[in-house]
Image: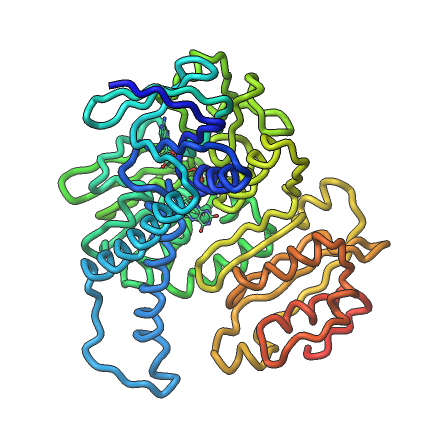
Length: 470
Ligand code: FAD
């Protein structure tokens, strides 16, 4: 059942990298095909990543506030409880509305969607095998690999996906665990850990490094650890997991602490959240001679071209931050490059966010990176507890920390932990794209009372320590 179709460009994988690339290619006048092996579009992010995790974070935060904070606000409620199946059902409906939105965008932009496993037959021929066993083959002048990533695992752990699970299953639990053991103190582990801690589970996070969210500025990890401890999350840093076993509904995790002593954790669920791995299975890279690096990522040059110059790769399947908006920027970049334009991505200014409470958001260099580079810098920090807006809402945890060049005052990094940090980081990205100095921000009016005043105050603090409200 083979059709003869010809496309200017084909995108394999419909995550935020792939579907955005498809839209931009279509906008630029290319005849575009999108191949997706799952029945819904949107990839990891929309189906089992960004969107469902934020849906559960919001639901669990409402519950937590009602349970722990409403009374102080003078709000009384009786019979508060968690209906887990309903919470998951609402999450599912958010996901299906969002993925249906991508179907609409594909139709609107006249993009041909082929459901099935896409693979290279040769550098201009794509084969799509659908779940009915039918094969469609078509030609494509150019192709973008946007096949994303899958949860990584340790070689000795058997994921049964019932009790020993990944983030994917943790987004679908029908009951709140009694004790959720999380391997890995990175973004995904901490976001889902806070969901279940807020819903009443005992949560233990086991991390190999000596701090959580280890890629972010160290101050952020320390502050976040303190905040999460307050909602009951227990941390075991510098612990190396050595085994995971399950017997019926009980899971035992063994680890070695920094003194080499064995520590045992007993729980009813264990979530492995040690990161994600580029996914290229079944893609037929060998048929086109495209190589992957030691970590399984597709190798690309500065134009995101593979060793075949008509085949590009973007998003989680290549090097760099595994973030939806990074994948999107790359999708637009490749579409425009393929159309003969000269696009650009500033990788240093891709923000990173952790949607715990308080939120953490960060852009540019960390203090540790500046030290390592030997850059002379100054810091300015401002705590949210000194802001009227934060006190009005009782969201007083956290701070804004800015790092600026010692000589030129140019902003080099902004690190925020606190209420609405995820949205506040946009100001820092804009400022840094325009190469603003801390003084530039310090001299701009910020509406009162808002959380963003903390950004202005931190920038005031960066020069002559002249924050006004501490
Ligand atoms: P993916 O989204 O992984 O999409 C790849 C698609 O390709 C998949 O649909 C897959 O089925 C398809 N595919 C693979 N091989 C083939 C093939 N051979 N043929 C056809 N189709 C194929 N990022 C953020 O920026 N913010 C967040 O808040 C955030 N939260 C997250 C929470 C969780 C729990 C997880 C797991 C991830 C989160 N991420 C977040 C990361 C984000 O999901 C990824 O960075 C993003 O999805 C990467 O996009 P992508 O387009 O590269 O690949």
